Image (cartoon, rainbow, N blue to C red; front, side, top):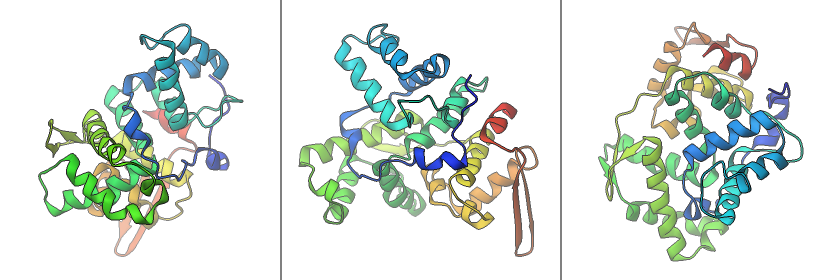
Length: 270
């Protein structure tokens, strides 16, 4: 395994494209494919070799070269920050570590949901609906939300009605595939439990990406991706203390300190 990692000084390399282009309209979640590709990439440490394994070696077991390349391009966009030089991301470390599958899946969901379109719809529509007590959502609800903000975003204004409809449907299917929703036409909010390891992963990622205080961690919008409010976040951070962090609250004073010096050390502790 390479000793080159994406740590705080490299964080600019892994910032997602801020485009709100709903790319999910043309793709799936590719959960198993992502695990396979990232595991093989971590082993070979060469994008050229990875491409050969995917397209020629058919490690994804897909029917055509074109479809294999299509999947590789999308997973690369989501999760591989640099093709010219191998860089091991925190997600690669989780995928290749000896950890439970639910930990891997929820960490993968967190990184998947960093896509600006997925993040926006989840944080600004789905989470408020959940907090409001809504029991289920449909694609038409997502479409109505997108239409309500379309004029504010050129990437959305330029998309056809059919693309918006497809994006809404694929969005809901994606969150069902990851376990946040359940059902067919009407997607109900699933009862979920995010593993402690994933909570720790997110806390460390937030620190890594610039959060500097306890309040910035607890109040961060990324927790809404798991449909968690601030009190729930605070409770779950207590759950991972003192194993992964040191968290103390005395009156109005809070203290949150990482127990491990890097993402790699944290993941090794899983």
